[in-house]
Length: 394
Image 1 (tube, helix red, strand yellow):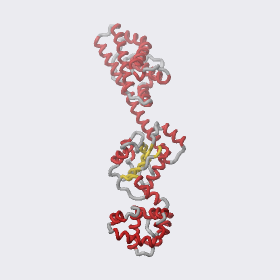
Image 2 (tube, rainbow, N blue to C red):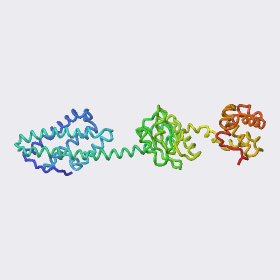
Image 3 (cartoon, rainbow, N blue to C red):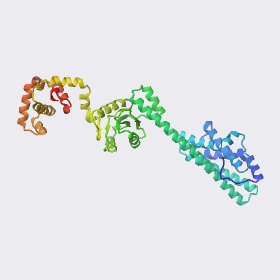
Image 4 (cartoon, rainbow, N blue to C red):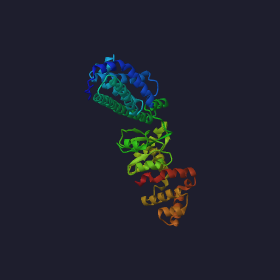
């Protein structure tokens, strides 16, 4: 390790410093514990050993750079040099602290060390100019230590962020794969993720999931999909007050699908409906799964639905295509409005008497089906949004 230090200490002062080094290290450690709240605890275990090692190395290396051989007995410490302080910075990142405490400890250590150095320098008859140079050397050296710790801190933060992101992606994939609860709990704990009451699956265009997650909540999870539908993001607490409106604003103008909130460990169910909604048609704007539930139910078993349509609408098969379409439109509206002819007429833009005439024809053709509640429900299914047409209408 090299630095801007160009000071050569007088032999008498260097000898006094060597003698004072152990007690000076203790003074610095005591001051740090007293003045830096984050370190106001017994300096023991791995944490205490790291701080003590850093103080001892800083003092002995200062002497070495000032022309005095390193005074510590641990040659490895002197050889590691800058790495010791980089490791201290990495340690702060790992425990989730900012760098402020460590840099504060460096400043405290520099102040205590300088006070002792000044005292020894005066006793040794060091001229005032040399005392000024000594002070500058002490604080320049502390700047070097701070820079090394800052590098270690930044590097560790980047590594932790990458590991955290990988763990959270794994958690998202496990949630979508219906993993057992114990595995979900372990993955959540390993990712440092506190489960929210609910999660909602949201499908967004490929590559935009991370942006939405960052703008929503730090607990949002991104799970990239392999298919062409898009990218799934799992958002917490969409069902909270005003949250759905906020989400729709964030997605404004984007082709996307917003799922239904589910307990966090059941978000795969929300994702399944999101995928089915997206697969049912092209997206041009944000869509709510809640607005498509009936269509999803109708489309769940297309073969069964086609058979049901063929059976229930068979009496209309002999009509001309135009007549059949008019009666089907009337039947759908009549069922939707529960037989209110005025509402049917208003929706279709025809006279109420025309509605009465068409309903009469439908009664003749369908008979008791219009009076039976179960049959009427089946007719509503096959006519929902005119998704399914009788085979002969093609």
